[in-house]
Image (tube, rainbow, N blue to C red; front, side, top):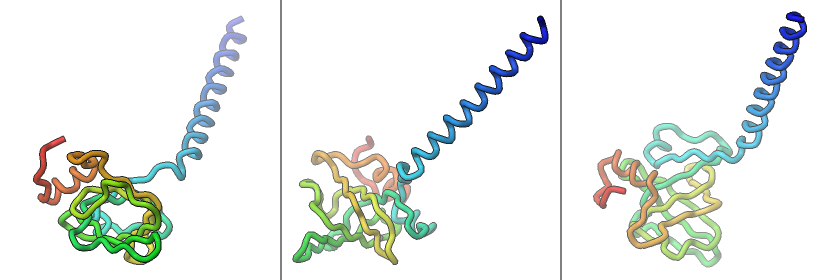
Length: 147
C-alpha cells in the first residue's frame, strides 16, 4: 500500500514539474516580441542597440529640431541632457507633441537614426512619462515637479 501511495505522489510531482516548465516556456514564447525595454539617449550612446532590436526611446524633443517634410515623414531629435538621438517617424503625431516636450517612441535603430513606428506624447499640459522624468533627473536636467 505504501508503495502505491509513494508512486502516485511521484507521478503527481513529475506532472506538476512538467506543467510548470511548459507554462514558463509558453509565457516566454508569448513575450519574445512583446517586451520593449526603455532606453534614454545617454544609455543608447553608452550601450548601442543591436541590429533589429525593438525598444522604447524617450526624452525631450530638442528645440528647433522638428522638421515636417512634404510627406508624412517627420524628423526631430530627442535628448535627455546627456546625449541626443535623431528620430524619424512616418505617420500622424499626437496632438500635444511638440518641441521641448517629453515623448516616448517605439522603434529600432537604422544607422545612427532611431526609426519610430509609434510615438507617445503627454496626454495633458503637465504630464511627462515617468521613464523620461527619471532619465532627465539622472542627467541633472529635470526642473519640473516630481511625479
